[in-house]
Image (cartoon, rainbow, N blue to C red; front, side, top):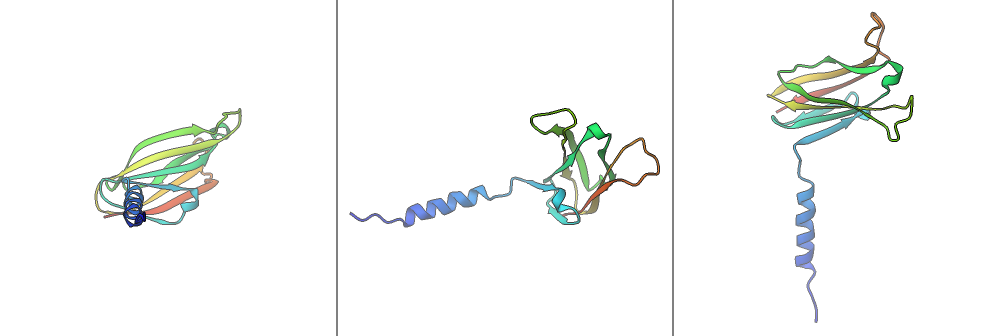
Length: 129
């Protein structure tokens, strides 16, 4: 008896394609510095950057048009296992509110040091359609 694999193949392709659909969230990391990100109104942008608050440094949003992209979540997550002096990552989520373009720029610095340049800068251009 001969069984056709075509229906099975079609089912696999159909289900595989379903897993590739956008979840409404775009994720970016430090390696995306200097890039451009496109979102639809209502979608979420998730950002994760390495950080170590035990040094006194932390990421601060330096530039963002919050009428286009609004911060909805910010948290620090320590590496596991969390050892004294070890780092982790800061995680943000932003919601695309309306069409437009904005620069999302963050600076890694000590908040009490006035007039000192940040030791790192992360910037992406966000286009919301």
